[in-house]
Length: 194
Image (cartoon, rainbow, N blue to C red):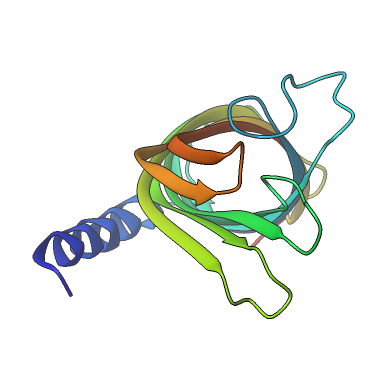
């Protein structure tokens, strides 16, 4: 492993531990999500009025205190660059987020910021002879609302923006994509608190 990769992995591990550490009197949660990507490099130029919405699935594990919280979110945007013939693609994000999430009774509005990993993958043949994979450190920002309908079950909606820190080279995507990947995501999720 290259020294720069070892440092990045060490930094990322420390960040994950710090962001997901439970504050005192915190309530832990797991939150499966479904959403769609828009803007940036996605096929959907705006959050509304898009005909080519591409689904994004994921799950977040975290905890919420009275004001602060943290989560680790893993999400996969299938066919992020579209499909052409046998080609398929995806963008996977693994983000450690710090949340400002004040508890106002059962309602928890929040904003978040995080760092993590973005992995873009494209396969161009049925036999996967030509496969391109790119990794980059990434960051995200966003906000939303959690509404707990019982002490252990709730609903969540949010909007986030993801940005890679390095350019990706994906052949045959708009000729050859050679730029940093950025996109927004609107999602809805269940929240199971314990």
